[in-house]
Amino acid sequence: MKRNIFLAAIILVATTLIAVVSCKKEDGIKYSNTPSSDRLSYQPPKVNDMLSYIKDFKQKIQTRGNDETMTLDEAAWHLSSLANYDFGNVRNDASDLRYDTLYSHVAVTNGTVSLADLNAAYNNIASMVESFYQNLSIENAAPRFINIGIEENGTATIALITSYGDWWIYAYYFPNIYDEDSVLNVLGINYDTCFSLEDDFPDELKRVLNLQTLLITAYGQEPISSGRVFYSPTRIDTLAYTTFIDPNGSPYLHDYMILYFIQHDSEVCYDEFAYCFDRYAYAAMQSLGSNEVVINWIELPIKHYYTPIGHTYQCPKIQYGIPIIDHDDPLN
Image (tube, rainbow, N blue to C red; front, top):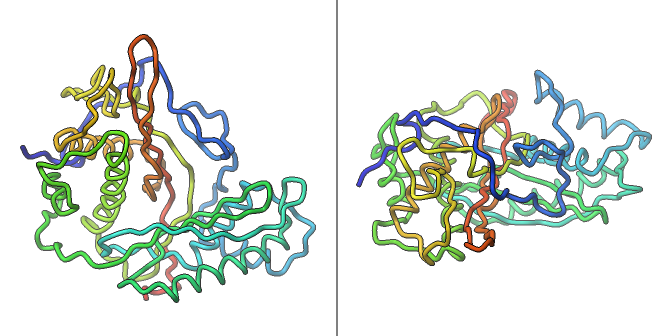
């Protein structure tokens, strides 16, 4: 059975159903009370020229004293933006992704960070990231996205997404419409493949959805020859199953696109996997804000809601951002 991916169909979205259960926000991250998404409590500045803002901020922390302070979320966003400005390189010809984590420290005083301490922390983080990539021996590695979080004790977690390799199947793929079966086969998912619902299904679905972001980058766009592209993070969002309804029917209750079931077999086989791959990608694209792209599918946990009948559902969590072109920094 052949399917066309979400770009080949127009799917209606219904938002009027009342949720029975909801996808809970993760502990340890501060969110606002926005009901439709898990937005970080610090919202990025709304400026017309984000590249200039980041450049000016870098100069600011290097030249100004420590009289100004930032909240932890605000400091973390600025550290992430600086790291992506200095190192990020969104390639349109990569074939795979890897994930790594580094740890550093930021001086925190009464829940805030001074600009002087932020500058010192960034210098150390930049040195660590540079050293990591200098010692990374994989072909055509490029830092796709760097996300930095700060805990109240000052621990800084540096999450690195690295693209590498080269696509060898450009001539094989169609220019406008994705044949989902072909994409999945290239990504290692075959017709006789089955996954454990609780174990490898969420990880494999996350893997192919993140590789799909590379395909979206690779096809339908001309290579950017006039500068380097990097991401600035905007928000983290969770796809709610009640938001997206499939007018053509789905394997799930109420024709939800996102997995929601009364009980469930212990396995997920090809047809259901392919359905989730297509519809989740569509739902993520429908959730994009102005100029946003999907940076990373963070996690797709399987959860359970127990009434007299057990309900099984999924809460896909996504990080969004905006691509920025630095015309003064040609592709390397």
